[in-house]
Image 1 (tube, rainbow, N blue to C red):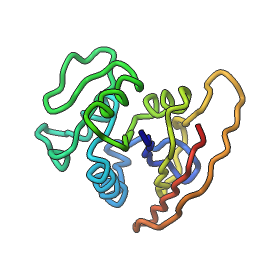
Image 2: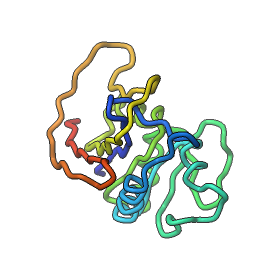
Image 3: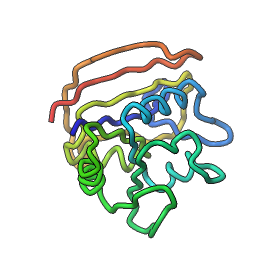
Length: 169
């Protein structure tokens, strides 16, 4: 199964943290919805899932399989709750998916990277600088490198640039 991590980064390389003062760009959100529809699914952590769902209801994701990785949440209507990245991938594979889209947050992305479960990363670089932020890491305990191959680079509009890389497993 091809696993794609999808994230928005700030122009200075931090994992973009959305909030009332810094909402996600509409261009990145539109791209995420299109990527989720193409994959037929997405994987997210509890907080990211709650942010995407907002006031409840399926929103733009009524037709896709949603998997929430959470150690504490018992159940979310409209989503399968699992405890680990591997369990999420196993579930989607059993459902017949060929591609898994991982939307985050940073802890979820880092788990996939640390466990070597990512085949591609899509970074949407937003036109904002962030003072204190989170980073995506491949090994939180060691200074490590993992070379990637640029597959595509394109502007999404609104100053957002999308970079797509292949990650060797």
